Amino acid sequence: MKSFRYIRTKTVEESVTFLNNNRGKAKVIAGGTDLLGALKDGILPDYPEVIINIKTIAGLDFIKEDSNGLKIGTLARLVDIANSETIRDTYKILAKASEAVATPQIRNMGTIGGNLCQDIRCW
Ligand SMILES: Cc1cc2nc3c(=O)[nH]c(=O)nc-3n(C[C@H](O)[C@H](O)[C@H](O)COP(=O)(O)OP(=O)(O)OC[C@H]3O[C@@H](n4cnc5c(N)ncnc54)[C@H](O)[C@@H]3O)c2cc1C
Image 1 (tube, rainbow, N blue to C red):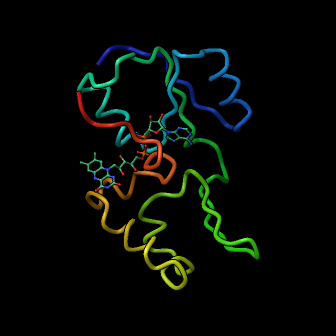
Image 2: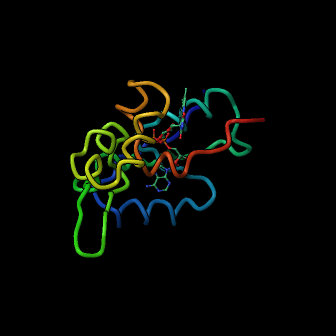
């Protein structure tokens, strides 16, 4: 892997500022299960100079239901979604889909945000 600057952020605002200040040169990292593999395999056309860790932001891993429906924070892990009572009871297909992803190790680290934003793993 090539070297990169690694930044741990504490708030969404801080992450956005770092992204803005490093436009086109920075990547967000959550669980890292997709991004680190892509970097190791040299899949991305542009190697990031800066990696911004958002897993250090508290409170983005929520799973909650209110009168508007289900809300899932970007840092909720696939294992949390698969095991959530609310999701298992009311949104079964989502629990089943999360449970079907990859392996337990990847579901333990991988977040829903990272799953939705994962890159195409292909040259
Ligand atoms: C061996 C293997 C098997 C897999 N099998 C499946 C499968 O069967 N089905 C399936 O759906 N997926 C599968 N995946 C993909 C897996 O679900 C993802 O790797 C995981 O969910 C990514 O989450 P992460 O938190 O680790 O993301 P990261 O690796 O941290 O990030 C992934 C991408 O998303 C971006 N990103 C992350 N969070 C945000 C955010 N909040 N805002 C903006 N960008 C963000 C990152 O910059 C990066 O580009 C597999 C992966 C592997 C390695």
